[in-house]
Length: 209
Image 1 (cartoon, one colour):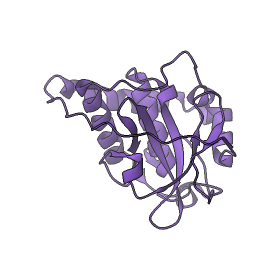
Image 2 (cartoon, helix red, strand yellow):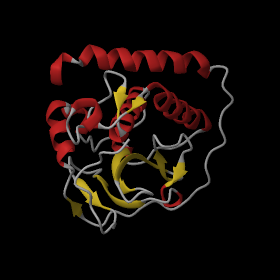
Image 3 (cartoon, rainbow, N blue to C red):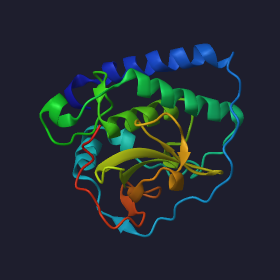
């Protein structure tokens, strides 16, 4: 991991998880989403260059364990945890482009300093949800074209109720086909690679907030 940032990541993760667990006992279990069809991968796709670099420094975050479930079996308690982590990360991380923050067009990390853009939000959410016991294989980083026609990163949760999207632009968790985004590609569930989702335009990076 770059720059000896392991302790920083652990500190962020522990702080978020402790706050979450502290309120879990009193939380009312959320109503599960309705069952909807998931997206269908259409073959191999070229990964985002910054993701390749990220995987060199954070290999465990990119590794695919095919022994893990390919889908999350949602329960009301688990759904409540997902909602809470999504909201907490969206509130805790300051949104800023990599260009403004780091002087580089696109870099993926876990928002160790509390600042990040779209992919950093989603990577941190996955990190925390995996620590809470959700299968990482069923949580795939996904590249879309947003409402501005720009490249954007979201986290797709592949569940027994369809593909649900965690986003930093909203804390509402929506089925993939109701986000208004064009879905281009996402991480494969079978290997450290990417698969196409049919979007015709593939951005070179995911650089917006």
